[in-house]
Image (cartoon, rainbow, N blue to C red):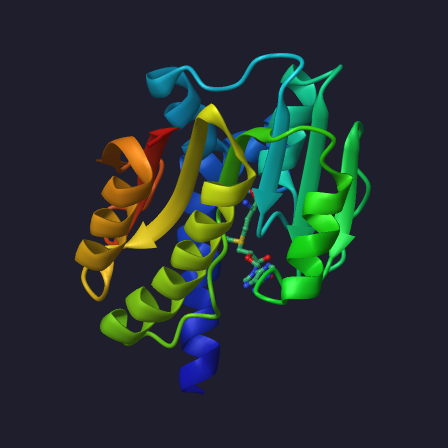
Length: 203
Ligand SMILES: C[S@@+](CC[C@H](N)C(=O)[O-])C[C@H]1O[C@@H](n2cnc3c(N)ncnc32)[C@H](O)[C@@H]1O
């Protein structure tokens, strides 16, 4: 009964959400795309010809947005889950934390990537500090990988949850990158602790 009530509340919230409605009209698979669009509008990141790695890509709205901009570069999309195909993307199904999967990604790169984005998140427990720490661990792994696989002036962008290990993540970011900012897009739900770390230029 309780579960039923929760799912009804969730469905109603989705119906009221303007970004859910807009994503259906615009043909995107998830409302998350508007977070990436806002980040791109603010930090001017994506250009045709770039090599971009999209971590935690399913169902694929971020990769859909990238594929509209990047026609002649390379988009590599990774997720635990299978995804429907998207134009100009190479899709890898696997666990990013598995070093074999990371090697597979590095092997596809003919040159260092220009941008690495991560929207990876564990299934939330509802306990905000635990969610923050577990998703933070994914962010840290993606950041370390970026340190080895990004070009000198590259960007690393990742979902974080405020609280938990966020200070540790920002400190690590400042060790690896020259510029580090935290940005919460308007389309990120207000009640959520979600934010994004935007890192630029390797040290
Ligand atoms: C919020 S969703 C991503 C939404 C996506 N950016 C989009 O626009 O469609 C988070 C994704 O992270 C993926 N994920 C979580 N842990 C992962 C891991 N270790 N390796 C790869 N993907 C992972 C989940 O399977 C899930 O699909």
